[in-house]
Image (cartoon, rainbow, N blue to C red; front, side, top):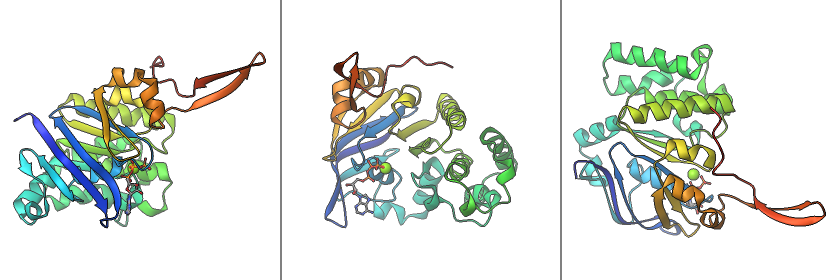
Length: 271
Ligand SMILES: Nc1ncnc2c1ncn2[C@@H]1O[C@H](COP(=O)(O)OP(=O)(O)OP(=O)(O)O)[C@@H](O)[C@H]1O
Ligand SMILES: [Mg+2]
């Protein structure tokens, strides 16, 4: 059990009690795992990550993190809340939700300051992150005046600077140019190699093989339909098609109609 980070049992969640978002989820995530959460729009991926971060609580069923129940009562204990916030970092799908300081620099340093982190270590991580993300020239700007990709980079820096054990990443590469996306993936893979658990929701099957050992597929009826090794899931074209993750393309070649899937999940990597 010491190796289990999250355990979900029969978790259900509806927004305002009437918009179902997750239905009967059983799931275990171990320490050091790389897990991808994939599924169509509205299949509950973001909701799941919010539940894992203790921002929402199940209507039915239970979630434990590090062996402790995650519920509203637990968060009324300051020691629990602080420990939880220190150990788990969340990158929101929409960076606007995450950014609230007057400058990028303050934004990135807000978390470590609030948690009373060591100043020297914070400075070291700060320098490293702005270098990796190439955001030095943004430091004095207002986070709200940045492009979407720039905002996402700032949000990534403010999540990673706390050096949490677990990273919850909601579509971390959405809106990023290919080179920046590459840097972010490399960064996340390095963080995992150094022991962090990374849980990433994505639609981008091209990054799944790198950012996940295990993939969980969610369905439009908000259920977890399958979890399995990345390569096995990526090969299952029928499963991917059923869940809007690849789409069938009808083409005419040499006068003949022919159908193939648009994505190529088993593509060769060129890096
Ligand atoms: N704030 C909200 N109020 C009401 N319903 C919501 C809210 N947020 C999400 N939902 C509903 O919950 C379901 C799951 O949404 P969620 O955002 O978790 O999906 P998702 O898999 O992350 O989708 P996407 O790929 O578009 O990000 C959807 O049917 C959605 O309409
Ligand atoms: Mg989402």
